Amino acid sequence: MVRPSHPSCSFPPLFGVFIYPVGSLLHASLRLFLDLAACFPIDIVMYVSVNGGSGVGGSLTFLSLLKTVRLPRLLRLARLVRILKILQIPPEYKRWLLYSRYAHLIRLISTIGVFFFTIHLCACVWNGSIASDTWKDMFPSIQPGGVDDYVLSFFFCLSTFLGQSMNLHSQDEFVFSITLIFSGALLMAAVFGDVAVLLANFHEKQNEYKKKMESLFACMGTMNLPLDLQNRINEFYQTMWDVHATLDGQPATLTTELSRNLALEVELFLRMDMINRVPIFRTCSKRVVQEIVMKLSMEVFLPGDYVVVRGDVAFEMYFVQTGICEVTNGGRDSSSMACLTMAVTDVDNESVLRLLRQGDFFGEIALLMQCKRTANVRAKTFAELCVLTRDVFESITARYVEDRARMETHITEKYDPAVLQQIAEQKRRGHPAAQSDASPERNRAGPTMSQPVLDAVVSLGDRLTQMEAKFALMEARQEAFLAEMRLAMGLAAPSSLSSPRYSAIARQLSSRDALDNCSSDEDDEGAAMVLPPK
Image (cartoon, rainbow, N blue to C red; front, side, top):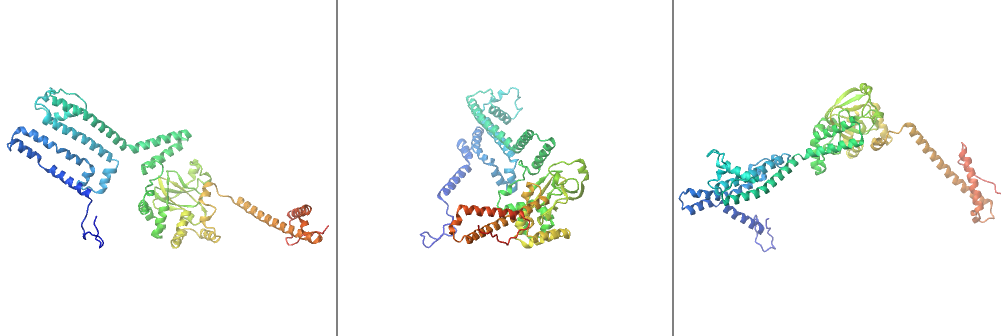
């Protein structure tokens, strides 16, 4: 950090001077001394001190041992990150080497390399300082000079690591062999355990997919599903695994973990080809396109699945992101939507009107009005469709009036004046499509209410209103009757009208009058009821 200069401080002004903590300075100094000691030519010094500068061949063995002390420094290169920094590999390749599925294979190769490097060091120590001159006698079948000494030393150390016994001659050889057997047992356990873990991690995804399909097979068997339906379910999971590498039947949910801007960039990248092909998005501002893209939902359809069916109430617009769909006429209708398969005659009666490919859309009129589908749309191949609901469209375009007008103009250009008149009539009545009775929840819950049922409900409401008015008139007549009673019985106290006798008389007369009024066809609502006094 840089120490700031302030008039109230007693420190002298130091601009641009970095002041490190004491611990960091000591750590850096210690590393400096270690680096200096490692660079010191200890082999040359020992050679000169032992042999006095003369080239004595017997001291070469001692010099080789001194050099092997510096070999462990090469273990620092075993770290893959350090190697990648030294080689200046681009970041995208670093990520592939460190985090891809094949990174486990790289770790496996590194583990095997460390194992062989350890055996190499042991072979060098064995051949250079431990083995006697007659150690090759343990291989009687080998001719002198037939096999290199390094190969024999490597084989001896590897065999000892694996626990095999050899014909040893000296105490040093026995001690070295004991050390190799003990350390070799630990090293082999670590190597085999690491190899098992790495291989399991390499096939982790395949094992998860296999477990998923096994549980799915058991679940479908428990439910006694028909074979045709089981095959379609297996095809769905297999396709989702091949395309999206997912096991829950849903595309990757990476965008839910990202920030808003990163999620927007990912969604725009995934749907950029579709957006560029849809003409309706070309007339909108970028802000509207971004909000619509973020609100789109994904639906997956297998070959032969029906996206929409003729006669269904429409409240969604579809965009083809991948795959091919067919627009058909005839055959299936909304009443047979519950059945996935059709009769042969229904299939023969269907005629393909057109094909929908990436960037095509259909059902846009459902965003503006309540209507029914006039044709079937069937997936010809595996298709992924983006869905824009009427509620989402209304919530977004309510804030952007100009963009909504342009989108409505683009949509209505393809329809005849009768459809446009129906849209205007709905708006004039104050019942827009977003608030119509054919909401998505009600349409999915059950079929649309028929017209006779609607008429009966309206008639019942009118009758209830008339009954409420008659009950109000009855209360008014009862009040008038009580007033006439007070006038006719002038000598009686006003409180006497509340006696049980007069209350019973009033209720009886009021009930009789109410029955007469309800049974008559024509009722004079303006007349007052006047009874003669008794």
